Image 1: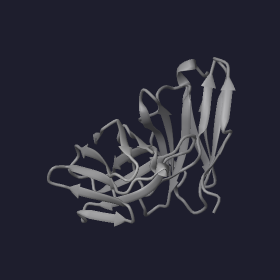
Image 2 (image 1 turned 60 degrees about the horizontal axis):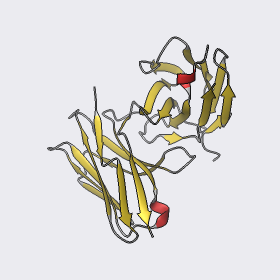
Image 3 (image 1 turned 90 degrees about the vertical axis):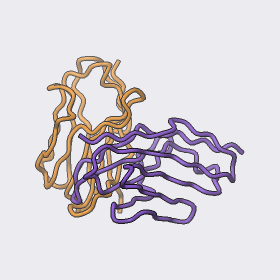
Length: 113
Length: 113
């Protein structure tokens, strides 16, 4: 089955700097890659996603890149702010309809003032 | 829209007791997922339903766990009898039939003493 590995497990960056979180997946049939942000005491919330027919997607300070050949994808957060502090999860799914999404182990991002 | 609603938000019970967690999906969403989150194992998919029918319950840890979806607007996850190792945060997530994005509820924090 699909396996998603995520690195690093913890990340601390200075406010205003960029943060990068990387994930790899094992199943070449995976075609949907969402990223979720989980704040303390809340459920994960989708922040951005990318499909296999796209190499990069941006939404304001957040961008995601996908390399299908290497089977890895990354989350980039620029100009980090204190409210970016949270746990971030990458995930992968290989069906286009509602199906199982396999989550990575999470990255705890801390923004230093 | 109210989003995914879960109840109770917190549950403390004693070993051996029956526990029932409840979820109300977003109106119109046809797929429902139950997850368990712990520090050790991360976010695990327990079971998911499409159109009220269980599709994959391979993540249900033991026969002590059961889930039902009697109609499109309600699902339960039951643990009987509960054990201390069941202590975790349980999330319900839902998605529309033809989309992959899953929307998570706020979770139920279960503590089994």
